[in-house]
Image 1 (cartoon, rainbow, N blue to C red):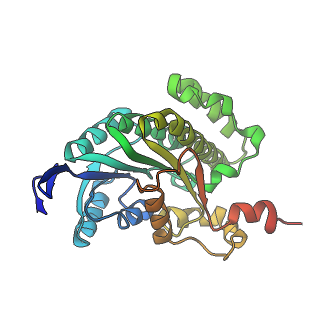
Image 2 (image 1 turned 60 degrees about the vertical axis):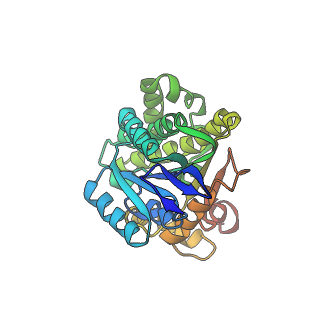
Image 3 (image 1 turned 135 degrees about the horizontal axis):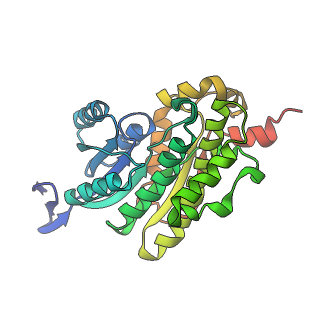
Length: 294
């Protein structure tokens, strides 16, 4: 096998386009962990908002033998996502997109409900829409949600407003912020916004699965529980009770979720589409049934 510049390699006398895996929020945590489980023949593009973190992650991947590149991107900005998709497509055929960018309640400040919704919810719309324009049959998008998607009672979930994310962003945000403001404290309001945003991610990934399925593009979501990343540790004060509700009564490890995400995002897993994979150590099921308080 003789490598050429970026786009192609020669295999058995044929010119083959290289496959590209894009990971938003790939500078650390589960995103970076997932990158380390991708096949090394793929080009890895990681994106995020902190350039220094991205550069460190790229160096780490290169030391492991990957061809990796960093690209600064704010997923709450459609134009920024569009530029990321264009850049990735310039490197080869986009085969895998792992959308792990997001912020949690503790990462926000008082009154950050809109910020959380823009990054987590509308960011998912932008990623799925802009990347699908550059992807071919046999490719896959994996949107990372959270078990918080399952935490809010159904009467709080404004599912009839979810389609507005594609047609009227202002109305979409207004309706979800109104629901988030039903909570009392600033943290709880951010928590509601986060739960709503992640419930939307599950819904939108499923919708995208049906929208893009006829084109041969598979879309699926994965919902982690409390994971021992920097983000997860920030949430431990408020969400630590979930540890006792899981099967093994522990937090998940980044590498465990990295492997799960990379497996779900593998293009060979072709019949896994339009669903959410709940990967939370059993804490959601434990809370609702097996470890439910009497």
